[in-house]
Image (cartoon, helix red, strand yellow):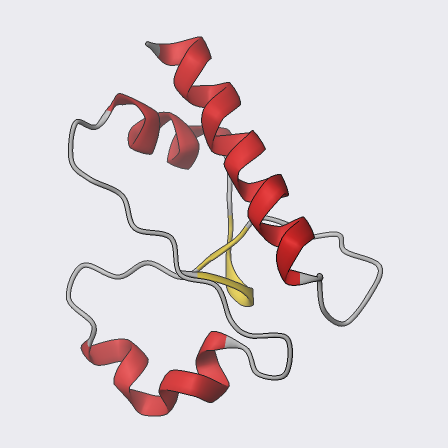
Length: 84
């Protein structure tokens, strides 16, 4: 799950995901609500869920959904190509 409240993504974290053969599901918030507002306390009950921040130095309160998707996939695909 992606969120500005998540743990900052680092190269070792990305490297782990890039090397993994397990499926990866990305979850983004909506334009009006983040994942914490959508899921509330249920976020901690989501099995194997990690909340990551792909934009730790964002200059705005929120990142547009389209930009978040493109930016996150760019980071993941770049690392996937480097480590595989």
